[in-house]
Image 1 (cartoon, protein in one colour):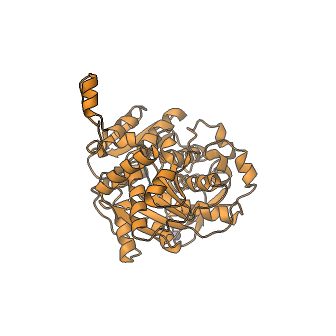
Image 2 (cartoon, helix red, strand yellow):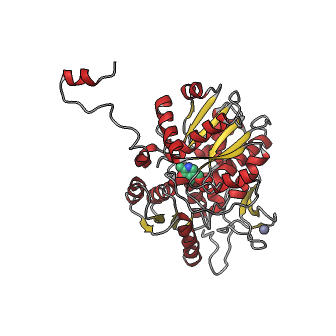
Image 3 (cartoon, protein in one colour):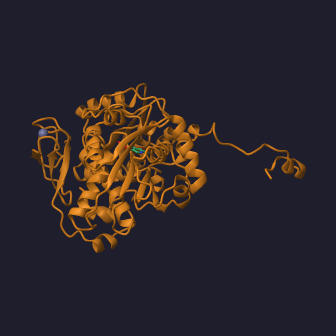
Length: 420
Ligand SMILES: *Cc1c(COP(=O)(O)O)cnc(C)c1O
Ligand SMILES: [Zn+2]
């Protein structure tokens, strides 16, 4: 059955599991499920609405060790596990004893999403977007990307046997270009910022019948980030963290982690307990942090200039909602300099043996800064997210780490150089 809404206006209801409708986050109006992202009344962003049934701890625990264990909480057909997705998720939650000691904390955990198929959290959102897009009849997967999304879309489309069309900034890190191009889809390096590319993608999406994961099927894509929150709670033994530090690019991941915690609480899967959500940005692209500190509700766009390219969105679509979450939960948004990001990457590497990409440097550096400033409680159960893999952003740290010494192949040479 072709369930897509065609330009001619034909609508056949797609089967998206527990999803029942799309609802406007601003005016609350509902509309049918389909490839839409803006409210026809007020142009506000649309979000998936659900009717959940049969969600219990044991039904989840009986599921596969990937995001599909939460399929009854996602806008995907029930048989999704039988599709040819890349099965992201169920990444490790690491108790970071050494880093906690160094920072003077009691209980610190790292949710390490570099373990996903293309080594970033983006595999989660793409898998959900792809499952929904296929159910709606799309045969082309597309996106504008700051890098990791490009990797995830190209890989997932290749595996699903469909075409991908990816737009990236031409000045992206070389590993992220190679890690997209290798999957063989159409890849356009665009001379412009991510925000320019995002605008171009919206124009293309109006003309082409393609599923742009973060544009016309964004409501479904965004729900994929909830799985990060579900997993953290389940891996903590069905408990919420008391504090969580989340990276902010568009702000979507942060708002959906909060949504996940709220759903788990409402469904009685975790005990209701207060938690505080903290947003992390690079100072070179800190529109949400700036608005938080100024007490503004609106987020003023900036032109990004930072080594944390995966978070370099100057005009974040979910910025105001991320602000809401941080304020409502008693958290904060903070930003850190490129040097602080590099320091944090090496700190995490030497204390925990985890090599984070620049976005992980942003969250760990923000954790440290918020602790130093007293905004974070060192005695509370805290989770920090590492959303990507250090190998993709080698250049960021290649100037600050290297061999202990370069020596000749002789014992004397080694003895002369080895630190005693
Ligand atoms: C995309 C991305 C994020 C968060 O993105 P949002 O747009 O805020 O959801 C975080 N970390 C990495 C590495 C990413 O690629
Ligand atoms: Zn509306």
